[in-house]
Length: 369
Ligand code: IPM
Ligand code: MG
Image (cartoon, rainbow, N blue to C red):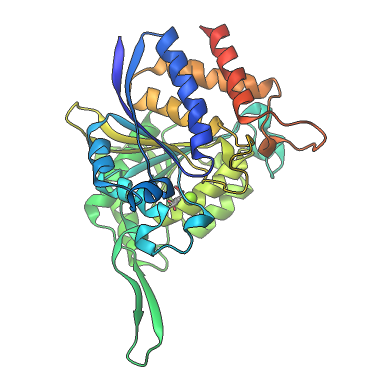
């Protein structure tokens, strides 16, 4: 019997809807496979603010520190736009990433064959695409000090954010990218702006140094991040693993997401150092946001969140076979033409609802079991 603890934080907007479906998938695994989770639920983001007046309570953070993995839906919404910056839903998510020191964010962008027609790019550019963006997640412009909106002596305001990276912060995410690449095709492209930013100069030097000393078998290239964005839409299949900083990784992963047909398809894993059980600290979440415009309507695509759970099975719970059958079931459902609205081109076809997609995935799981 495999087992482990799971903290489920559905969050805001479509987060709770897609997480409900993930819970049905979890129930299926618990009833049909030799696996059991110690599950707990809590609030994050706007939902936590409504209840506790903070986007992440100390109690929730303490729980997050103890579990083997966190599953998070999404945070944010227009209702919270006027809140002070420190209370915004996004601060809850960022605090989890920072406090748990989740420095390596894996964002796989895979184009399922059934969806190669759905990308905004030509199908030959994206079909068979399988890249992994490794985004540094706990430092850089998101957390650097000093930061803030301040006043000059003449009363004019100015704003400041700092892009900070220590050698160690670069080293550890580089190692993570090289380890992942070693299990794939062995190719890594590192992206920064070494032509403009000192951070980029140090980033390039340290990444190269780790490759030379510890991973000589890896083929490492470097690219300026702006050129990288261009190459991602020009010929994405030239890449296997891309390693980049927090801010560039945020932009490049949205860009890569669209190559796969929809932002509603992309899962992610955020990993840190080992916890007391010898497992890497981990949080799994879809790359998409809370999508307030469609929330509550049964339109949301649950696949990114379901695939995030699959990544949890693979990376935290050591359930490779379960992850494989889940991934295959998702693929089969897409092949059968079951699509939520974000994946429909012909508007005359009725989209499947969030729960119908999950019904179909469970049906495929039954068949595969
Ligand atoms: C992401 C999101 C977050 C980020 C937001 C919600 C804070 O865009 O995970 O990519 O900027 O990192
Ligand atoms: Mg983003």
